[in-house]
Amino acid sequence: MRRVDVDTVTFEFGSWELAGDQAGALTGIAQAIRSALSRNPNEIFLIEGHTDAVGADEDNLTLSDRRAETVATILTERFQIPAENLTTQGYGEQYLKVDTQGAERQNRRVAMRRITPLLQGQNQQ
Image 1: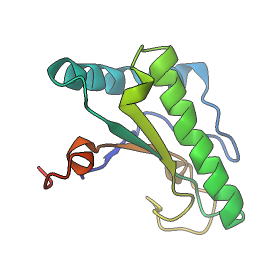
Image 2 (image 1 turned 60 degrees about the vertical axis):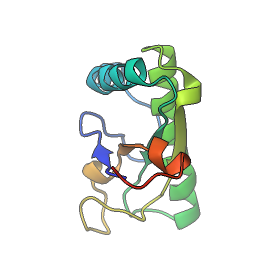
Image 3 (image 1 turned 90 degrees about the vertical axis):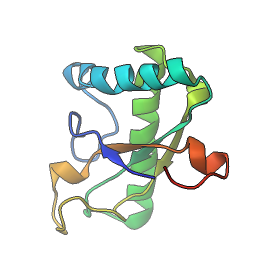
Image 4 (image 1 turned 60 degrees about the horizontal axis):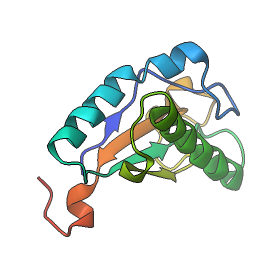
């Protein structure tokens, strides 16, 4: 399934919290999800959390999980996206956007995928 990088938000080093202005930057994503849900209320979206390459793999995996959960919580609480339409997964530093072993803000991000066809056993559309 195609991935959409949520370039409007990135995280501070070692943090899974978003500043208030960054949470507001999720408005476009929330509108797109709401639009999809108005057509099909059973749509499921995967929120992927990512980190940069600094730190231990296990720590980065936990941190990326928390980043994905933070975005899901904001979408649910602030934008009223039903929690049952969202799922989260952290990938740590597995999929760096910028290939560097250093601290890189662009790698501390989330991405989203519409995974409904996967859950229904359909081919990619």
